Image (cartoon, rainbow, N blue to C red):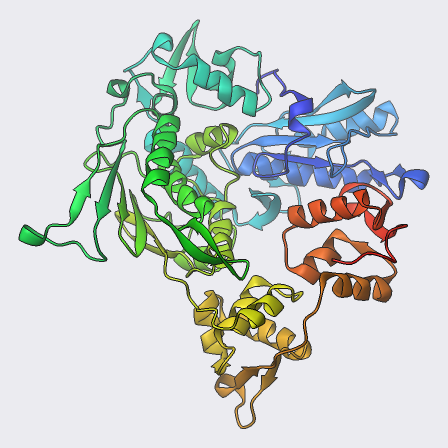
Length: 554
């Protein structure tokens, strides 16, 4: 493991994800905080260090709150040394210990974890694995298979004899380093730490990942089809001969960051804008949500099989859909069903490339992009993305035809303000004039039967949907019961009366928004004096009525 550490000021501002986590070493509210149970801290260190080692590495900071504030610890030196030694004592095979780091007047415990070549076990507690911002237990054989495919068999790991240091783009390398919190360090150290280069004496030798990511010129890239082809089709189907309707645009080539940026630029000019239903209103917008099509592109670039040298990534833009095709089928550890039902999955054919693209800002985190792609399509009232795979290709299809028509503007305004999820809103608008079944709900929202049943029952309980007589089980039918409008003021006041306070989770549940959206809305209400924050910042915060509460109206 390198002796370098990332810039903690940069790191602590980042969200927790595939390569970073932070944990507090205190319990209780600020005015009565106490040190956490030592055994619980040791167990947590063991679990998270092993999880990072079993995935693609990462950094664990002990002594920082959920909001990134460094609060240090209150343990004696012997307890701290015990914590730092956990990776050596509790993990098999042993991992490097942590270190003390003085930061803003407090002491943090920092564990820089490299990916292990073999599965790492917590003695007596199995094999943890990092998936986005969570830790899950996995079978040793599963982790071994992921490592074999991602670290050994992938084309990105092969040695390259085609470049030397001057032929790589140092400015781009430094941009990645800044995103990793390593600005100002030696670029060679960064390349070695990210496993895209190795030292042989005083020289650096590069893997194909380094060339694909940082080559100054396309000619240095061994794969002649590492670029992207883009086709514009006039109509919904390709035609030949006199009716030929396909235009191939100039091939896009270069290192992967340049490839992504140029593809973004070209597609943003080609994708038409039109009046689309968004947030239950028709607005002038691109035909596809920007995040959705950009994620389809970056996912193809990050995860394609660079061992296939006979063809590259293809993007087909039809009048009614956008298709992205990439060489290489799904890995055995990832299923189409898991993708369609938004289950986080972390198995990358190119883990080195994926991590650097994350630090360059093109990817959010492993496992997060496709669930958010689905969510973005839902928010724009478009069909969910379609995923298909065979042994040689993975395809993503985005369609631009709305899944429903908003025929009653007044009803859409009412539905917009209901404290329910976007999927539930879709069925209320889509089935406003007729009956629907569990199967209809599944098809509309691309969820399984159990999720559909649970969300329909929530609508029944809220008296937004009524069961029709005569049907039970799979034959049950429902109709929409149109309620009176519910304002944001009324919804939040109801929750405040029920609990005496509201938290971020309450706001998310009431309005069906993300954690970040809820945090921003609550912050604005605090600025206006409607609410007052109480308790620990971050995920432990809650809010009570402020001086502006009684007169607040939306």
